[in-house]
Amino acid sequence: MWDGDLRLSADQWDHFSFKGKRWEHVRSAARQRYLLNAYRVLLTRARQGMVIVVPEGSSEDPSRKPGYYDPAFGLLASLGIPRL
Image (cartoon, rainbow, N blue to C red):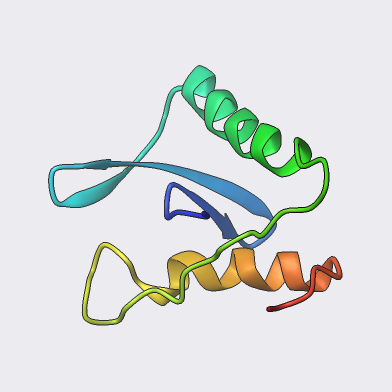
């Protein structure tokens, strides 16, 4: 399940952490590497297949804006990952 903690912005990944009622940028390089590695592990460990869920988001919920997810979905689709 993709979340708003890793977002594609222009040509780079932006790292976030949800605190209280809002997302905050992750500034620590170590925490950024940890987050990227967590997604890398999840995306490379499938043995017989996997489903990647990217939520549509909700314009009514400021913590789940569609813009948080749409770029990552577009990247995955551009790589040839079929939409189910």
